[in-house]
Length: 224
Image (cartoon, rainbow, N blue to C red; front, top):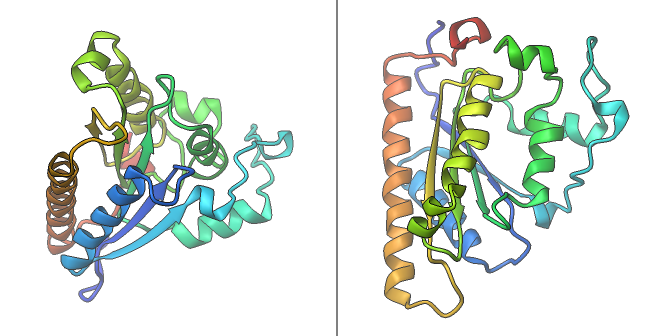
């Protein structure tokens, strides 16, 4: 592994998927970013709805045995977000699934060029390979109810364990915030956002430790 430059700061990419500009999820993203900047680290936000991101994967983009064609918007996005230490995905759970916008971002950007064979061999060379990922999800239902329906565990399996192995990531974690409904008390909002703030600070400490030890992102071979 090569050492990080002495003056390099850990870099976060936050991917937000919620159509409302002033949503709770937007507040989560803002809180996370404030904590990151407070720790002296860099953060880039990709607000998919504000960007009017196109989530539709076209046939020409589908990865096959040979490298598929990357659309100009996907190539530009990869150039912008590449090289981050951690990718933090923030989105609500709708009908037990993430918004189609987030799924499309994974299909077209985070998973660009990764074939089914790559996934099976744990050799997916994507922008996430050797990097860390954190998913922060929210739901109107409380986590105990979701657990009874096995919904949170299902998300952790698909958007956690599966992607962790498919893209040969260094680590993949999940923070779920349940009971997020319209009109809930401000003290509950403040406490929940404080939990996000503390989680972000822990992430920053982990990345700072990585840089202090001179840990480069894992190669595909190292992470397999």
